[in-house]
Length: 202
Image 1 (cartoon, rainbow, N blue to C red):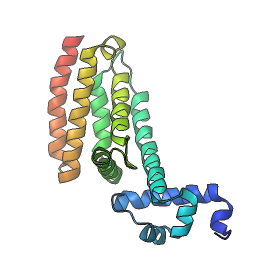
Image 2 (cartoon, rainbow, N blue to C red):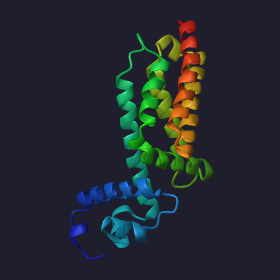
Image 3 (cartoon, rainbow, N blue to C red):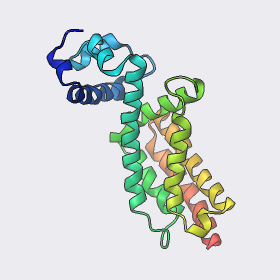
Image 4 (cartoon, rainbow, N blue to C red):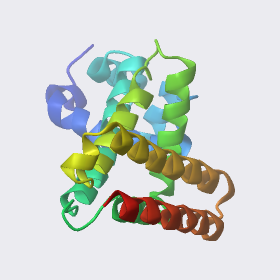
């Protein structure tokens, strides 16, 4: 490939194109990604994308990595606000659901759901490991909100797993139906039950 302005400084151009490809994936998804329409949409060419990312699978991996950065950034913000001495899983779920239910995050979460499912269907493919990684990420954040005595017990692990299952189920419902009022009511109903068990545990 001839040296062009796009490939003379591949690091800067790669970052720029990755951000553009990520924005494209948020709108169009990744399951049926094709390099030609993507390249046209982001002002590049298939040859340049292949030069910078190796192939389509390499580009998809890079976009997935970029999406995970946003996910981990959100989770780290929630984690930093936790104080296990005065809070617990109820507060963690409240913070997480507030972020998940916000309309401005819908595109990112749809991409997350698509990737999560693809990881389960094709565990050896480019998506492989994404689902398991995100489960561990979320459980770690929920665990940070638990007092150490609870967090390190089998009961504590079960309670944060249940909290994650409730969040994930409500999120998938919200993405499918757009019914924020009903899904939020369901979260609050479960939080009332969780609050009771949290008080009992104390």
